[in-house]
Image (cartoon, rainbow, N blue to C red; front, side, top):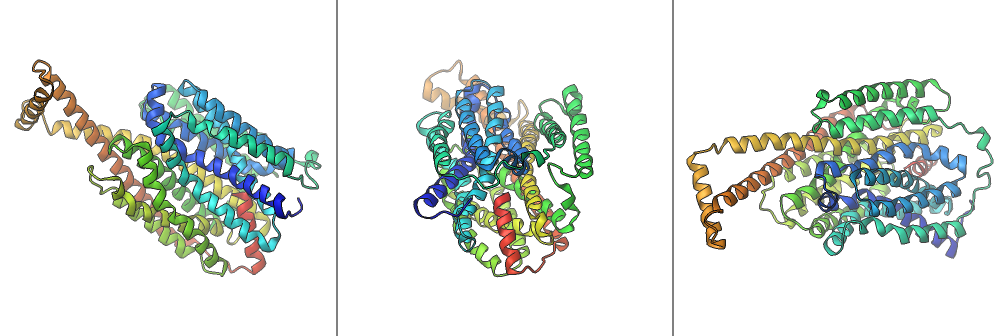
Length: 527
C-alpha cells in the first residue's frame, strides 16, 4: 500500500487506532461487570470469568496465525472480515441468555479481535513514510495503553447507568463505521492475494494447538469445582491437553512451514524472554481481574468507582511509554527497565496485599500508580529484548511467539487466580469459623449484640437470632474472600520476584540504526 497523505491518511489513522482500541477495551471492559453478569445469568463469579478466559484464549490462537491468514485472503479482505466478525459477535454477546452462549460468542469475538490488533498496526505503518513511522508507533502506543485503561472505567459507567449488555452493544456503531471506512479508504497491497497457491496453512498444528490449550484451560478453570482428578472429564481433558501440546511441539518442529515457528526458541535470549513475558502476562491480566472483583465484592465500590480508581494512576503509563521508547532508541539496554518494572510490580502486589478491608477507593491510588509505571517499563523493553540476538528474518516469528506467550500467561493467570481464591477462601472460612465454636463466649457475645441491634431496628424478637446468624455468616464470608484476594496478590508478587534473577541469562546485542528500525517495525507489525 502506497504511503498516504492528508485526509486519506487521517482516515486510516483514525480507523486503525479506533479498531485496535475497541479490541483492547473489550479485553478489560467486562472485568467490572462480572458481578452483574453473574447475577443476570444465574452463575457464580468463578464461572462467569470464562467470558474473559475465552476471549484471551481466542487471541492466543489467532495472533500467531494472522500473518498466514492476511497473506492467504489478502490483508484488506481479512481485516474487514475480522471487523465484521468482531461486530456481529459483540451483538450476539449482548443477546446471550446463558453462560455457554456468551462464552461461545466471546471466543468468536476474540478471534476477530486478535486480528484487528495485529493487522491494524501493519496497515498504519504502511500509511507513513519510514522516517515518520516513529510518529505512527507513538499514536498506536497511546492506543495500546489507553484501551485496557479505559475499559474498566467505561464498563463501570455503563453498569452504574444501564445494564451489562451495553458494554458489547457500543461496539456495533464503531464496528460498522470502521468497516465502511476500511472498505472505501484502505487500498490493497500490490501483491495482495496473488500468492495464495504458494501459501501453506498448518491446519494440523492449529488443531493441535486448539486442543492442547483448550483442554488445559478447562482443567485449570474447572479443576477446583470438579474435584480435580476425581472427575472423569478432568482426567480426559488432562490427557488430551498433555498429548495435544506434546504433539503440537513435536509436529511444529518437524515441518517446514509451521503455524508457530518454535525453532526460534533455540535462541537462549528469546527462550528466557518468553519466561518474563509469561509472568508479565500472568501478573497484568490477573491483577486487572482480581482488583475489580475485590473492590466490588468485598470493599463495596461501585463499578464506576472501581473503573475510575484504575484510570487515573494508569494514565501515567501513557506518559512513560514514549519516554522509554526514546531512551531505548538511543541504545540503552532494555534489561534495567525489565528489572525495575518487575520489581515495581512486585512492590505493587505486596502493597495491595497489606490493605485494610476498611480502605477507600483512593487508598489504592499509590499502589496502582506503581503498577502503571511497572507496566510501562516492562512492555516495550520485553518486545525489544525478544528480538535481541535473532536474525532480521526471524523478528516477526520471535515477536509473534512472544505476544502469544503473553496472552497465554494472562489466560492461565485468571484461571489459576480463580482456583487459588476458591482454595484460600475455603481455608480462611474454616479458620474463621473454628475460631468461634458454638457456645464460645466470643460467639455468644457477638450474636447477642447483633440480635439487639436487629430488634432495635425492626422490632422482630422472634427472628432476631436467625437474622443475627445470617449477618455473622455474611461477615465471615466477606472476611474470608478478602483474605483470599490478599493471598492472590502475594502469589503474584512471588512470581515476579522469582524470575528477576533470570536476567543473568539475557543478553543484549548492539544493533545498528538499520537493525533498530527493522526490529521496531517487526515489533509493531507482529504485536
